[in-house]
Length: 171
Image (tube, rainbow, N blue to C red; front, side, top):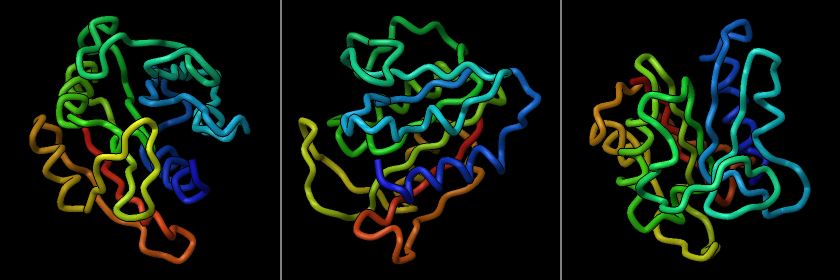
């Protein structure tokens, strides 16, 4: 993960989540491949919040392993208050199916924050399939009937070369 993504997720937390609320938070694609412990867990470190990192394989920052990227049978409907993901959707062949699962596992009135690059070099892990614009992010939310709260693309110099697009939506 890069610094601008971390800062965008922190901004989401500060603008939309209440520190006093009891929240269950799922991070999709949480595996920390950098080995630096630079991940979203620290942003959501709060005694009232339960952060769960989800990925396809065991490893650093992973608490829950799902067997199918597009069918999270391990997670019941309406389980999470918040679902987040950063730098994962560009690696999914069928990201819209994963977004359907986000909608399914979000509680009513739950929030999601999806961060994905709009540009940047190929970085296979194991695939690198897509880049996302603000318009694309809006369509993803509409496809799964989430209410769009905010969509933007970071275009400042610090965001280079990724210029992440950020979707914040509510069920």
